[in-house]
Length: 447
Image (cartoon, rainbow, N blue to C red; front, side):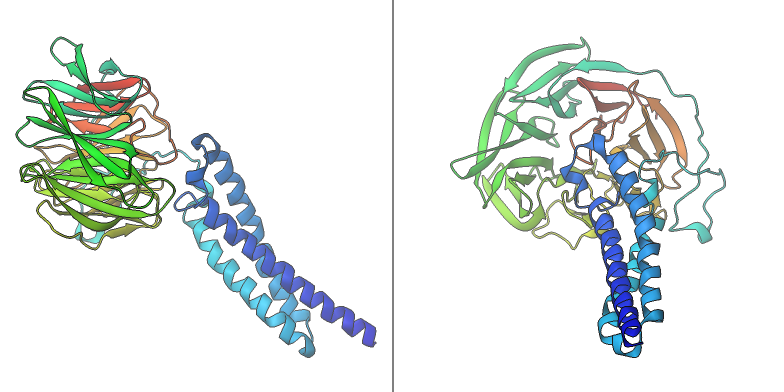
């Protein structure tokens, strides 16, 4: 009889430990591979994401009920003397299993599904629907033909010069100059070694260009005088592990906001440089590869911190001397868009598009890889992986206004900026530019 009791007690303990292990295994799968915030996904090639997310999701689906059931059985079959060895692992397994089940409903198993938006109606938003994801009926279903292709195999970022009607493209060590009327390249401006983001000054006569390179514990940007076609390298003392600059944005005061990159993961300062006084302000701190963009009126700078989850994003006045407390999204971020008056910002992520400053708090569109607001009217453009379409939404109600077909099926590249689908727009809103494999494609917006 004593041997049977000992066997029963051993069985209860084994079930409790197995159940706890199953729940912990499910929790680990969620932490590493959830499409919204999985820590392992940014370390993997984007091509492996769909299968990895699907397999991990199925494992969670199996491990969660297994862990909870085994822990529950162990509590039932264990005798009084087993409680000390059974209760703690069993309760831990049940609690972790139940908590881990939440990310499944968050969309874990749908990480590889199509990003087709939910059905959308044409009725105006009522007070009851404010703050919820909108439903929209497309006003224009037939996409317009693909636009003009600009070959630039190493392209990273681009910005339009309305004064000279040129498109500047960072590519390797050079800024390419594409003349829009003749559709030909002018002589490139050779600057650094690994150029990244660029922006044009409010007066249209200067470029700021980031360079993801460092030397002798210094990092730098380039300031280009477009009238004289000359350039100057502006250097800054590098922080520990800082390996170069990443993104730049001009404010209305003519000063340049600068983010950086680094070797590994971590946080580094954001800088503001005054070209007139040749002085800089250092603000601490943001994550590596923070994306910056200025509003059309240049009064507001929007930012999205990359390589960190939950993602942080927000906006601040261009003359600010400190960064505001950011908003947070439960996903990795990489791109950011800001409305022409700086009131509204949109941050695309793997699971949805997060919106601030609007009655509409989010869009259900998945895997959006690029965003830009119209500089003169209430429209926002979103490029979506899995399609060749850039969708234009009316940014007050988020009804779909138009579809622009860029003739290439965008690919999800693991949520990194400066890949395909990067969007920029001309200062009058007539031309939309989009990075595609091998170069840049542009077309008229018609808005």
